[in-house]
Image 1 (cartoon, rainbow, N blue to C red):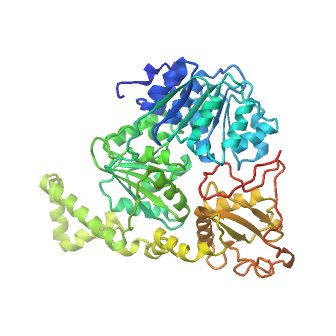
Image 2 (tube, one colour):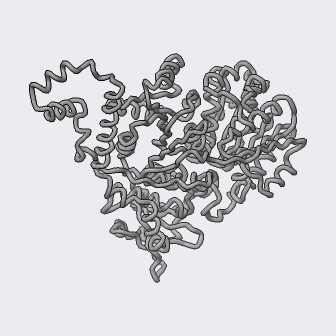
Length: 599
């Protein structure tokens, strides 16, 4: 496959230029098979390849290549199971179409509906979205699929399950018969066959042999980081890794700039690289990195595609990506050409759900490492200082300063002279008490101990057979929480979670209730407990009393007597008839059996 180039696949010069600018080198196997087929035939395509194989680009590159830029008709609909994946696909498309004037619109639950309605009126040529949101717009007449040429189901094995199959079949009924259908999936379970049989015409199946999801040469570890101390943990990791030569991945361009700047101020050889940096400057930065004048690159996922270096020692996830595919793309940049590499993730309490999901998907254990304390860091630094001094003596590279050395030694005691030089150039780096003590925080945030404790006590308290738990939120209508969406947005933002997968939501005058699945509620509780250990805004709801009354928890209960209603409460819904809390963007695990929305 290394002999195949993007030029040989039949893509236009405009797309090839974007590919070159983005740093793609050679197509992956799924791309090499699918792209020529999509460009040269009218066949539908069923593509199967593992996570991290590049199958997403296999469909959107030929679609972007064939879009009629002079027409304002909707020409392609791309459906994904999660809002995070939808955002990622849309951003990739937009980054490749900056010079081609292709209008791409993103639709998913959580965005303001009025904003989406406004963008739909601009005449999108491509829509990327989640099934539930697209269905809503279709049934309201805001989206018309009569003109689409391409219909794509990305991660079909995740979408064609109990949660999304009805929505997808309904969307397909709105679409024309003479469209091209692309169905891509990591696995092909039996229920996919029904969609293929009923909605795909003459189709070709491309199946790429499954390989290991992670390189056995890559050691995968993570460190717990107390809230607000990720950068301190990163520095601690770099302090004990003097031979670090690698990439630190951040989520946003702004965060990339901030982390690189703070590292430089602390004396690390670090530079940032992202999409806002001009190509000429990017090439200079990469040149310095390849010459090892810079040992640390702080990058976004998209920008990292410009980096083609085989001997990276480390990859660090300063922020975990939203999906396992991005995780594998990141860590595969180390451990190449038969060499060993280390992939490090810095994990806060709110990242636990992502970490478990990544482990489950890649079928590999990410081992927890203990962050060294101040004394251990100093010992590491002393060891490497002595190593560097010995190397310079052996290589006879330090004789230039012998004259001034003798002069200094005659002036004061040798030990005092060396101590003074260390203080001048290393400041407090060799003082153990200058390093923050994370030991207590680490013990309190230890993932295994925390979950064992919750398993023993909290999971059985105010939980149900469906895996959901009822939480009490000390905010209600009097706090400008006017609807369930506002409440869920508040909880998600404070907990640093993208998708809560919430169930029933009750908004009362001074407080509220929300049902959350078992893989989310513990993260939410911990996040609010970290913010206010004495009186957190979100706590477990108490069980019903004999009289059917559910009293609120932790001292919040008597704010308003008229709010102490039964747990059935008052059920809100949005204007479209959807019950808030239904998450079309979430996976099927740990969820409730929701009713189909009525229209």
